[in-house]
Image (cartoon, rainbow, N blue to C red; front, side):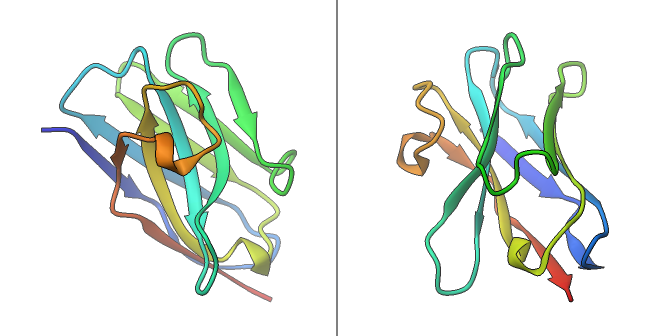
Length: 123
């Protein structure tokens, strides 16, 4: 049974940092792209960042480029999202997902999803 379990969300002030974790289990993800998406109230789910498990190539949405960093720890089967210089606009539920198609930008391509973790940034 595949499981993606996010953790690390919380309430912070603008300018603060948070690190989200996504622990993956239940299958081998070496041929997958691991992505982070977010969804704010009343808005569609949007792409944040992705990383190829094999090779480590990374991709970012323009809105987070330079502030967020995605990484993975192969030994722990865990993907991280380091979020710095947080803004109120970053407030959302953040989801971890796994994609076998390679078309990392589109949420519909992803095969597995975590339950999400809330990030709230106050001004």
